Image (cartoon, rainbow, N blue to C red; front, side, top):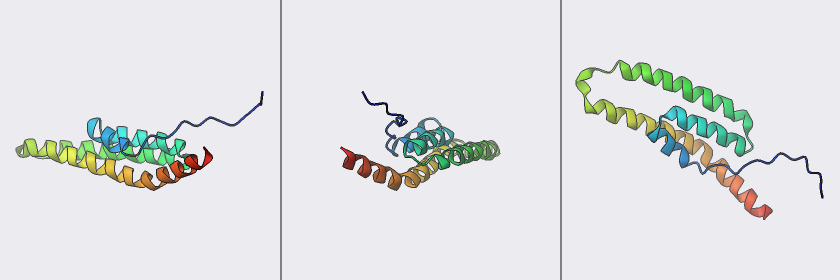
Length: 110
């Protein structure tokens, strides 16, 4: 039996999960998923900045959204989901290349 002290790192989520979480829950949730994914992609230095910026951006979004004129009606909801999707896909594109590099390296180990 080998005494192996290496830390077990779980496989990262596919980056397409991030925009899905951003649209369904908010881009703050997408940012948290992206932060967790950075750790799993072996780039933990990007975890907390991603989470912090996502949450701070969501607070700024709430202030912006509450100051939209009431005359927009349903357009305000479309604007909200468009922003959620936009931020989610920005986070997706930030992780996409790192995810495929990780996947390529992990496939080579098998």
